[in-house]
Length: 84
Image (cartoon, rainbow, N blue to C red; front, side, top):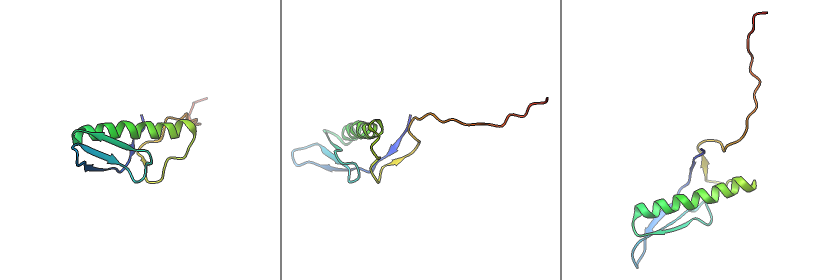
């Protein structure tokens, strides 16, 4: 499974709870009762946005760091010494 590092900001709301947004991932808006809940929701929203980009062949937004490459098939030729 791939992992992305996405910067987010969390701020308290006047009516209570917290709001998470990201300056690099448009569409990431998450609201929760606690910081932990807000982070959990933000993680799910971010995952769906990045997966959608990958699935549709859209570029990953600048500022989003892929920690591991997305699942792709890699073909290699490796040398194997054989006594003949």
